[in-house]
Length: 291
Ligand SMILES: [Zn+2]
Image (cartoon, rainbow, N blue to C red; front, side, top):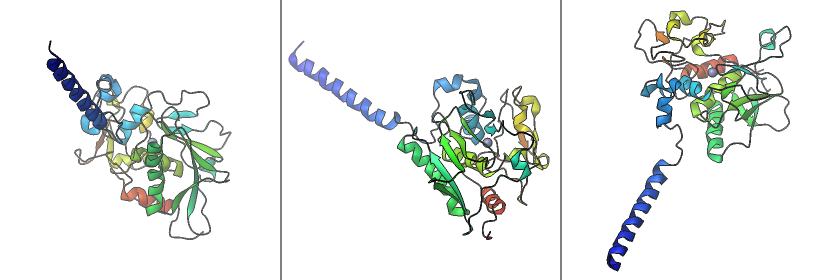
């Protein structure tokens, strides 16, 4: 082999290496709100239940991220993505006195928060964008905690979950680094912390959706339990960021939630709070009213 030939091979190798590096710069960086599917995800039964267009549904993301939720030591009991207080005694304080965050004399509702240092700066940015989004259209203002007693403590635990409403002292809002760092998931979990439940559990949901229990994974029916919700005079909303998708908790790729009367209506595809989500916050917290 001549020296020229060797040189030729070496330069080809170099070009190849450089091209691979370029490709990697485009594809190897974890993308925000990624919609890439790996073969590993295709093998996953939870994932396989969803059509491609459903993969970024809030409920699809939650199902994927919450496969082993609440199983770390010192985690609360978690049902779906809702943490359940275990120290209730006789009365649930949220039923007894409401679990709203208090209103300041300037009319704003300041909700103190702490973000754990587990997150990368990219992840922190997504979480903070979610927090700030409330302040642009409602009187709920998330503010970094200084010395307030009650606050939300955002941490990466075993999935995405939150308590419903203010619980007192530092309450965990878990946004796992594995699967919860999406703008719509941040909004969804914080809406729980502000006191909101899932849209498809609304007291009037039977007029707007039909739940097909025969398609629901065994043992998961509690996710479709109806609740005596305060609907605050707002219409049932398929576009709420709190609405689950058509195939949520499906055992057989058949729909579990079908809208009525128009079964083709789009449900549970919100990528951000809907107009009605915003109206509900404003009504629950009396934004625009003092005291
Ligand atoms: Zn939820």
